Image (cartoon, rainbow, N blue to C red; front, side, top):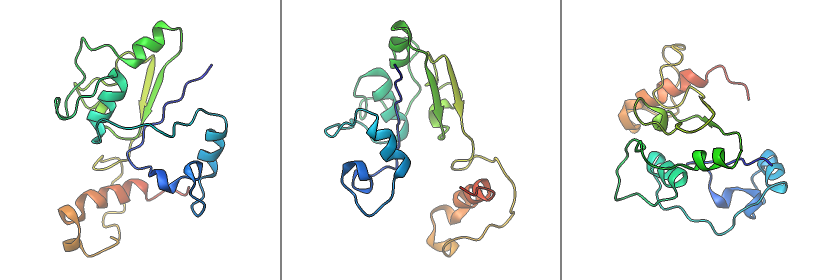
Length: 158
């Protein structure tokens, strides 16, 4: 048996074909959903990235009681419970926050990987001045965060 838990801060239910959208193509997610258990009445206790992962990995609602903070060292985790059940666990993330030094959200997984290039991750340095989608004064932080992201994804083709 395989268990794949997908956590995304950016999926909107009304933008997925699995939940009835008929104008946005989500071919690969549709294929995964066809072979999966799809929850149609699931609710989140926390929205920000790290508190939400804390909720999912510990089974406890934490936001607003626990701020954006590291995983407590003595806190039981989903990964540990899955290990006890004999399952191999591996975490893949493209947001670095939960894996920042001392945060330890990768704890108890057999293996883990962070895909670099999100937000202000200084992965690539070129192009030095990427074209912005709007005037810098219209952008939060004068577009510096976006400039780094545009450098990071400049070579992506798909």
